Structures are given as C-alpha cells and as structure tokens.
Image 1: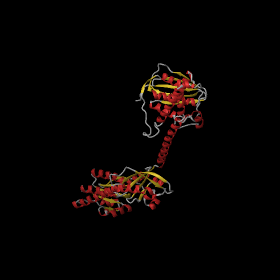
Image 2: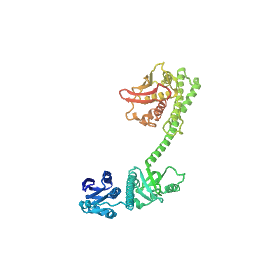
Image 3: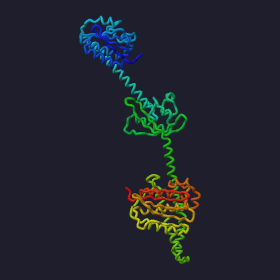
Image 4: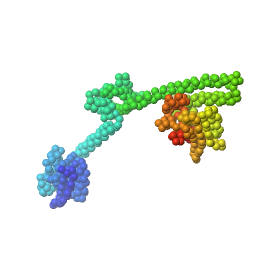
Length: 511
C-alpha cells in the first residue's frame, strides 16, 4: 500500500474528473488541497472525485473535501464522489459525510448526475460549521502530537542527563527515576516502585536534613538554600555522600531531585585535612630537631669567643671559631625561613604568612663571595665563582641568597669528598641564568623527579645519616624562585654530575 498520493485530472463532457490514488492524510492533504483549489480557480466548478484507487482518508482529507465542496457551491457548481473503496466509504459513513456528498458506484453515473442546485445560506452555514469542527479536530491532533513529542524529548533528557535524577511526590514517594539513580541506589525502576519513599535510602542520622529541606520547598520559603548534602545508603549497604539540587515541577506538587555522588571528593578532602595536620606537625618537629643541637654549640662558641685568652686560642683559631659562630647564626636564620616559607602554596592562607619580595640592585658575585667565605671553612669544599664583577641584578637579596644557599647545600649532599663546585652565569635577552655544577655529585634517577616536591626525602636513612636532610629546602627554594617570576631546574648523570640552574628575569619586579 503506497503512502504517496497520486492525482490525475481529465475532462468528461465539461465535467472535471479527478482520480486520486494512495492515501489522503495529513502528509498528503496539502498537495490535494492545492490541486483542487487550482482547478476551481481555473473554472472547474463541476467536479467528480474518483476514489477507485484511494486506500485511506483521514480527518485532514475530509476537511479538504468540505472546503472544495464549499468553494464550488459558491460558484454554483457541485462536487461528487465515485468508486469509493470499502475502507474509505466506511470512514465517510462514520463521519456522517455520506449525507453531505453524493456517492456513486461508477464514474459515468457521477458525471451524468450533474444538474444545477442552488447553494442556500443554511447549507453554507452547515459546511462552515463542519470545516470549523474539522479544524478544531486537526488542531487537537497536532497539539496531542506536539505534547507526545515533548514528552519523548523530556524523557530522553531525563534519562540521558548523566546525573542521578528522581521525580518525587509531595510525600517523598518516588514517582520516576532514571538509570543513573538506579545505579546509585542499586535498584531497578520496578523495584523502586516497591521501595516507595526516598527516605528509604537516607542514612538515619540525615533523615532530619532531608525532611527539613523538603518542608522548606513545600512552604516556598525564601530561606531555601541552593543545595544540600546527605548520606545515601544503597542496596548493598554502602554509604555515599550525595550533593542534592531540588527543583519544583511547575503546576504540580512534584519535585525533581538531582543527586551527584561526591563520596570520592569528601574522601580526598579528608585525606587533605590529615595531610595538612601531618605537615604542620612535621614543620614543628623539624624546627625543634634542627634548633635543638645548635643551642649547645652556640653556647660553647660564645663562651670561648668571649674569653679566648683563657682557653689559649691563637689568632687563627679565633678566626675559624668566628666563622663557625657566624655559620651557626646563618643556619638558625635558614631554619626560620624554611619553616616560614614552607607554607607557601601548600596549605591554608592563614596557616603561615607569605613574604613579598623587596627588589633592589645587587652584585651577585659579591653576595656569593661573602657566603662562600663562610662555608669554605671546610677543607672538603672548593668553590669557583666565574661571575663578572660588573654584573648587576635587580632582585630580592634575601631570596637570592637563600636560593643559592639551598642549591649549594643540596649539591654538596649528593657529592663525594672533596666537593668541587662551580658557579657561573650567562644570559639572553630576557633572563639571567645562574648554574651551580658539581661533577662528583650524582642524584639517582628515581629521586630526580621528586626533588622539588614538599617533604620528599628520597633515601631518608642515608641522607639523614650524612647531613640531617629533612626534605624542605629545595621545595622552598623553588617557591622563592617562582615568587621572583623565575624557576629552578636540575639535571644529573654519572658522566657530567649534577647541575642546578636558577633562572631569573632581567625585568626585575614582577608584572
């Protein structure tokens, strides 16, 4: 059976005969209407519609017939139907149209039957009323079709939203749930209908939260929060933290619950909280363990240096002990800075203060020489500085000093005795590059990527035994370099040793 409407027109003794085959329905009614209107407009006022090959007619098709009848009657013509298939004839009978139209068994009978019949006002009103009724019926059908399409679209969005969603009645009965909600709860939609209430999934201690929030929605209070959270217990008894957004469905007592599983997020937050506590405890412990052994050393040194003659010290001994005292003071200062600056970027803003760099012009060579003088009291350390005297750098003196200090200490930690360190400088149009090199220092391949991670210790036992390394100075040095709009990188291999590179912009203060 063809869904395509075919229309053929011919003349039979001044009568227009229109043969229609296929289906006259919503999809083809426009085509049929256009053909009949054109025929009537061109003078065809006496028309026979031959429906021998018409398989089906809908309300839209009936409407076209009524309109055509009205138009030809206005022009003192007539429209008759011939050769109706039983299904089409049955539809016309059910609609009562067999009393409006003249029906003929053959085309010849319909053609011979034509005589002029006046089109009175009563008949016109009847035809207009029928057309209006059919128009209303067509509008209703289209509206129902649109509502059906809207429901299909709504259900598709609801089902494929990617978020667990449930439509809940005013008494918290679950009306409808999508697949994601089924996965979250561990029940199918059919089983959910038996569970009935959303409260069945709420952990006992959170029942008050859910009912209170639902009541606020019912009252439409302005105190309604944007969202809330509760703990959901699934079919297997697993507890899940869910983030809930609740919306009303207009003109109904129903609500749409959108639930997002945030169990993993809450676990991460809890782990982070414990990590921050562990960090704070670590910093306090590190401060204590670093400062404690320095106290007696400082006491003894001051005791000796305050009265060197009583202890038989010569000039050289006093110089050496003076350097040791200055070095210990420097170590105390380093410890303070490490503890303070270790908070940069790794915890709450209020935990430790942040330090804003203070920029001024410095001579890197002179600053490094003053520092090298302190550490070269050991015969195991040799430092060669190849930086021009005239080089000037606009930066924070204290930051620069502490960064270089940290890099030198760490390159010494990984070296064999004696440590031969080279410090050099080069630049380009944008940056200054300071390299600290030690060919005898080799950092293991597995340690290298983690050097700048906070609290990473590497081979803890060996490093603590060798130099008391606690894993703070390099991460802090990198943070300080970043606050100067710079960076620190490191390379290491058995052939060339270890090279730290400090990059600082020539522009000085950050933008």
